[in-house]
Image (cartoon, rainbow, N blue to C red; front, side, top):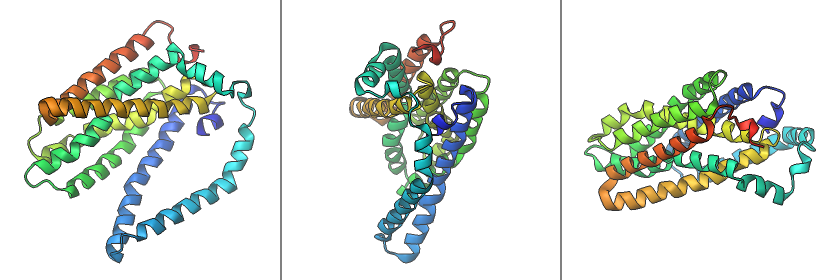
Length: 281
């Protein structure tokens, strides 16, 4: 919806707006869990979380009824010739599109790999606890916000694919360093590197996919779900295979290798002279 409403802007400006909106989403990951956790801790009744969730759903649904229907009506008819399922499927399955989705899925492997490994690393070290897992999650979410805004700023002058590669190399550096940590406090030192890579993945990947089909932003956004499915599959393979064969540190390093493969594929696809997302279709 956001991309369709910003269609009159250039792709770089639209991507910047996307980054700002995603940073607002990230802020909710900081505020809401903390506030809800504090309320439940005070009331000492965990079942209250269900009531809070129901109230939040009702509020969001009300917002949709008031504002969402008008937005939907304003965008009806855009790209109507492309709404057929077969046409959409042929576009997504096309070599130029699918290879880029595959590249992003490989590049983003540190995210699910880190999600599986980080709690195990923390609780394995002396003094580490599940409380540290929650604190690190909140810390990283907080640090992601300025990096999302920074990514949107640089995207005005730097192609999206270059920002993605630089950011995910940073994320890979974090995962590589994670394999060497021997204490919980060292993981805290790596949090800013983790946040930098994760923030770009959450914001720039979406903008990149939407720019593959700029006049069909809804179909472009759906590619994110396809990439996420592939990405989680790659993360599971890395964690299960490397973790079993060479341990948790080995799984982190194997995840780095998979990420580098994705960066190389994206570079090959988009570094050619004149290559741009808008020229794919």
